[in-house]
Image (cartoon, rainbow, N blue to C red; front, side, top):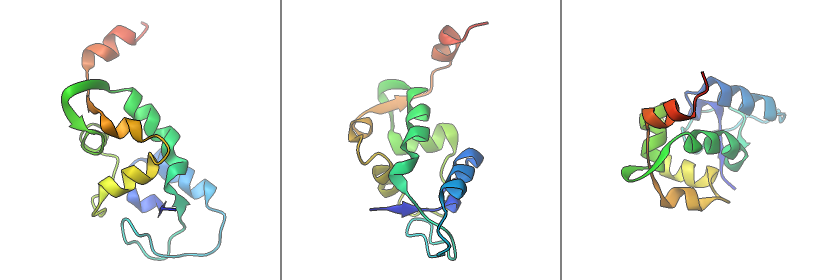
Length: 116
């Protein structure tokens, strides 16, 4: 199992969720961002957040790999993470089909699906 901490991410909602799910008093070192004295969560427990982000993007054969798309469009990962690909593979562990596709952000998709 792969574990990450709230310091791995820039998104405040993900950070809050991680902190709310960490009930252990044991503090340790994160293998992704190398933060010390932090509580860890199983990376795959964050899949729902990432699935929502990916579903807001358009499939595009000329687009970006999922890791690059998440960082480019949402700036989701902390720059301290040396291997973002490994973290994303851990998050999408049971849904690897998302990693086989390429994505782009489309303003027209947002406009056509938004009710005014």
